[in-house]
Amino acid sequence: MIPKLDVYKERFDINSDDEIKPGLDCIRAALRKVGNPEKGLRVIHVAGTNGKGSTIAYMESILKEHGFSTGVFSSPALVDVHDQIRMNGMPISPEEMDKTFMTMKEAGLSGMLTDFELLTVAAFITFERLSPDYVLLECGMGGSLDSTNVVMPLVSVIPSIALDHVGFLGETIEEVAGHKAGIIKEDTPVVVGPLTNEAMEVIRMKVQETKSELLIYGEAFDLLHGEFIGESFQVSIKERRMKGPHQAINAAIAIEALLHAKISLNEEFVAKGVAAASLPYRFQEINDGVFIDGAHNPAAAKALTETIKSEFPGEKVDFIIGMLKTKDIKNTLDELIPVAASFTFVTFPHPQAASGEELMSSCQYNRKRVTKQIDDTIILSRRNDRKIIVSGSLYLISSLLD
Image 1 (cartoon, rainbow, N blue to C red):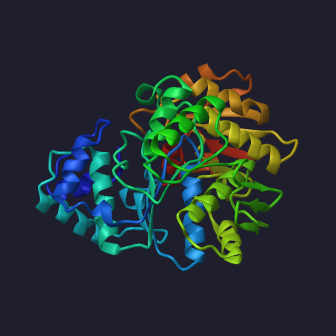
Image 2 (image 1 turned 135 degrees about the vertical axis):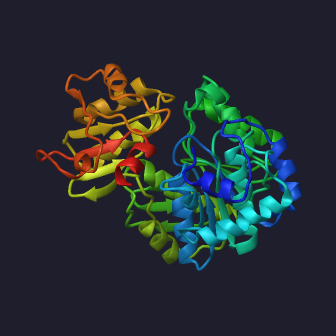
């Protein structure tokens, strides 16, 4: 479900399938029809379970400080389809989307693609036309069979690997890592975060097969106590708007990725870029003591818990949670319990949303309830001195803030 995509499909009489169909044959055929716009782009390709959006936000901000223009393709939509394709931090305009869809209509792409494949082609066409200096490309799901995996990137980036989308990517870390490793290309640098041994073994095998250079957080580069240290570049990072220990790792990965994309970095501009970087719905304070964070799987929930511990030492928080049925609900909630004072569960408008009652039955904490109150009052009013954290799904957050 991509909000407002149907508006353009109907306007230009383009049909696409809303199912997920992993594979690259269809998108490659479609891209040939529009002149392979992806081939002329300077791309940094990012896959992984968590941290993709934050790592891209850091790269985008650092590049901006250096005077470079950027194009970003990301998912899911935060508001609607326009913010999935961004130029210099701004969603593309309806006028630009019209131009792109006209190109796809004239090329005869109707009926060839899934919705996400169609949007991926739209992103490549848009970026070819607007010519950003660098394109930061986020995998939608997995890597090897994701529709974005038709590019030859300057560098491949994998911030993290954990279990998610098990119905498509597999039920073991090794299977998931196999999909993520699919973005690694021949003789191309690969920058990765602190992966588990099982995931790292898969990555190392792929790197050996493709004769690529592997840069691992904690080995080739690091960011500790505000100091980024790489092989040939060091910089002091005094400020970060994006909080939590995991965001220091994402910042370091972003810097290392830009270095291995052969971009000459200035220490002052890097520090400013890291300080200014932000991403909607990532531990974002929207009202006094009210935060939103789209932690939707156990690994992301664990990172959120560590952020709460570091930002509010010794405090417990009230969680408001809504999640999709397709997620690992019990283990995600278990990761939040150490910092929880209470849980409030909600059902939000999405075809795959779990009901508040289903969520509550999966929660192993005694202070919990279900509410039918789904409007902004639930997140904008505090009933006590405790912080409120709204989490579980980006779709929940966007529905509350719409």
